[in-house]
Structures are given as C-alpha cells and as structure tokens.
Length: 454
Ligand SMILES: Cc1cc2nc3c(=O)[nH]c(=O)nc-3n(C[C@H](O)[C@H](O)[C@H](O)COP(=O)(O)OP(=O)(O)OC[C@H]3O[C@@H](n4cnc5c(N)ncnc54)[C@H](O)[C@@H]3O)c2cc1C
Image (tube, rainbow, N blue to C red; front, side, top):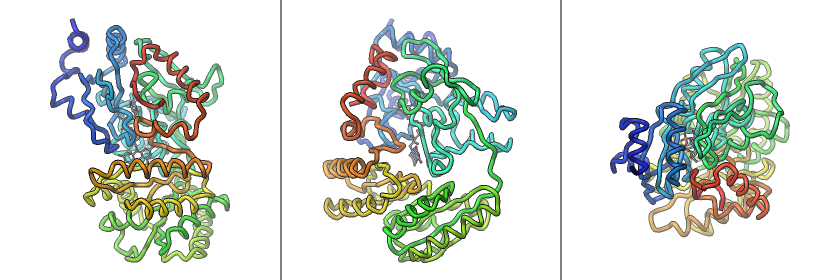
C-alpha cells in the first residue's frame, strides 16, 4: 500500500485529497512566487491524533511534510518545494478555553487571528499582535513565523505572548514545550525555538497564549507630509523622545496613490507621505502624548493632523492600511514585498537609500510599514520578465539593512525567498548550529524541506 492510500485508510477519505484541482488550490502562497508548487496530497487533520498519524506515515515512507495555515506567507514558507504531504490546519480551528482568571487562551492552530482577538475582547482581554493579514492568517502560522504587526511597537510580537505549545515532532511523537505559568525557566526555551521555525521543526497543534487587559482609550491620527524624509524624521524623533505609540506606520507617495480611494478624502493631493499614529492607555496620558507628537509633526512641516472621530472611523483607516498591498497589486503590477528592519534612528538614511536604488534600477519602490519598529516594507513593482531586476533590488536592500545594523527580514521570514541572503547577517558557524538543531528535531530532513536555512 502506498503512503497516500495509507493516509486515506487511517484518516478517512474526507480528510485526504490527491485530486489535481484540490492540490492546485494549495500550490501558491501570497509571496507572488510565479512557480506552482503542487503537493502530492493535501490532508486536513481535525485533531492532534490525526497529525500524529500523518507524521508516522510520512516518517515511515520518508515523505516530505509541509504545514500550512492560511497560506498568507510572503516568503514561500508553506510551499511544497519537494512535493509530498501538505498538512492544512483549516479544520483545527477551535478556541479550546478562554481563561479570564489567569489571562490566557488555549487554542488550536487553525483559528483566524482576528477571530481569536474578537473572542478574547468580549471578556475585556487583549491579544495585541496584529499582522495586517489578521482577517485571513492563522494563529499557528503566526507562531511559526513569529508574526508582528503595527502594534508590535508597543506590545511586542507573537513570541512575547507564548506560554505553552503542543508539538507533533516529525516522527509522530507528541511533546509539550513551555508552561502555562507567567514565569518559567526550567530547561531551554523551546517555545521560542518553535516560534519562527517556519514549520521546519514540527507541527504546532495547540497554543497557549497570555493576554493583557484591553486598553480603555484609543486615539488614531493621520498626518500627511509633502516630504517623505521629513515624515521619516518624525518617526525617529518620536522614539528618541521616549514616546511609545501603539502604532506608528509610514505610507509613501506611491502607496498613497494606489490606495487614494480607500483613504479619507481630505488627504492633500500633493501629500508625499502619511504617518498613521495610534495611541492607547488612560485618556489623559493619551492626550498629553498626542500634544507632544503634534509638536514634533509641526516641526517637520506636517500638512495637517487628522484625528479619527470614532471606532468606525478608526477601523476604516486601518482597513485601508491593511489593504495597501492589494491596492498596489491592483495597479496591474506584480508586487514583491521586502521587510528589512533597521534601528529606528536610521530610518531616514534607509528611506533615502531606497529612493537611490529606485532611481538607479528603474523599478518603482513603494514604501509602507511599521516604521515605528524600523520595519519598513519595500514593495518592488514590476512586470513579468523583470525578475532579474527584482533580485538585484532585493540583494541591494539586504545589503542596506545589514550595513545599517539591521536585519534582512523583520517579520515575513526566510521561507525560500531570503535563503540566498541569510549569510549576510549570520556567520557560517551560526548557520551550522541551526542546521544541527534542525537535525536533532528532524534527522530524516522531511519537515518542510528546502526552507529557512541555505
Ligand atoms: C496582506 C498581507 C499582510 C501581511 N502583514 C503582515 C504583518 O503585518 N506582519 C507579519 O508578521 N506578517 C504579515 N504578513 C505575512 C503572513 O500573514 C504571516 O507570516 C502569517 O503569520 C502567516 O500565517 P498563515 O496562517 O497564513 O501561515 P502560512 O502562510 O500558511 O504559513 C507560514 C509558515 O508557517 C508554517 N506553519 C503554518 N502553520 C503551522 C503549524 N500549525 N505548525 C507549524 N508550522 C506552521 C508554514 O509551514 C510556513 O512556513 C502579511 C501577509 C499578507 C498577505
């Protein structure tokens, strides 16, 4: 009996599909990689026991396995580059327990991030990590990529909320990493190792996250500028003055043009950059910080300072921000999005360098992103046939990041796209140590092969 027949027998035909149509539906992610990576079979487990059965069969037959949440990866992480079994977590989508007494939630990995946030907010609790894909991506994918988002500036990224993980190892063994307690220092920090492992060490099948109280007061501002570099100086200065907004997003001219219809109508037509600034906390503290930020914006010649009127207004602004990538794609161009991250004091330098590269290579580079974290998303707009130029831009951007003391990827991960550049920021020794860790978890090399390490 071959391994696909075994999967069907042990899990039931309704969870296993090797039809071409079904496999094609999972052959891409959001990275824009043009190749179609067809899995040989797609499996939709409904429990940890199902995942154990899949892993045992794959281990016995030496078949590659790739975990997949919602496939919103921007780096090729869930693509089955060596075929084999694609394990899609869309049916393990239940929140198991919301524990208000201990401020935590226990969940299956396939829960959509926004659904988890909405559920815990009903109990007055807050799960801050908010990738811009939050209405599609899964909490399991967020852990596997250590997802961040606009609110990472004040509240940190996914790993800062991890308490305990249940993991199915590539040979089918079930282990638990971490503890449900707020403090825990016994042994190595294996939950952190699983975070951002991009599906290369094992399957994450249960996640316990810590929560915090929901902030009471939130205020959002849109601030247009007629000069991108001046806007980026505001970002550096706000941080240098020790003000910590919950979000501080930068949107440049090309992104504004693409998204103009979604943005409020009163954004000046000659605006070359917008800062989206959000503050939260006690109302009086928010007001005081808002005044200080307004003063910095005015010093850098802001064209206006627009405050959101209410929650609906705020949500409209954020929806426009989250849709920026798709707005750029709707211009008819293909978009490759890069997410270098640099120390925040060096953002003006980075922005200037990006525009130098744009001039030199001749492809439009639209910048938006979590500037408050130094995590700027540079979108390379191009047509089919210009892939070599795109690669050139990516390589230049990775060099800029490392020269400015930053990293080649702040949140999207290495996947397959960034593998050629990892050596720029990590020594051979550091890479070989990580390879050794991978071998301990996955001696047969069947767990999401071809990803993460060069
Ligand atoms: C419009 C848009 C905006 C985005 N904005 C942000 C942002 O602000 N911040 C950010 O960090 N990212 C962002 N992303 C990238 C992406 O959404 C994140 O990386 C997200 O965490 C991926 O979740 P997913 O469920 O889609 O996982 P997938 O894309 O399906 O998988 C991502 C990786 O996780 C692994 N994986 C998935 N589930 C599991 C599991 N249960 N066990 C083990 N491994 C698993 C996969 O093998 C793969 O390597 C954005 C993407 C888009 C399209």
